[in-house]
Length: 118
Image (tube, rainbow, N blue to C red):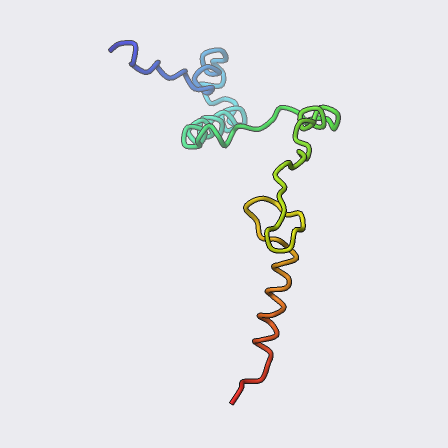
């Protein structure tokens, strides 16, 4: 159970700086204490943010490295061709033949544009 216990929090930067430089603790240099206090507030802000917010690349990826990484993402040739049973043209398997589809859609559009019969 003790292995699951959280590690004690590291002392803040303000506490470490005041231990090293007693003049900062005495308040003799208020300009030094103000930025350190701001850093202590920043630490509490970093505790609120999830770690994914801080996940950014260290440096820019060069064009050559980017192209080497994406070299295997090229267009793969299709092998799933078949012939349409109605007209015999080549089509993709499990897809409608483009020639037959255009004929059917022309008929549908012609029927919708025709004046109604009385």
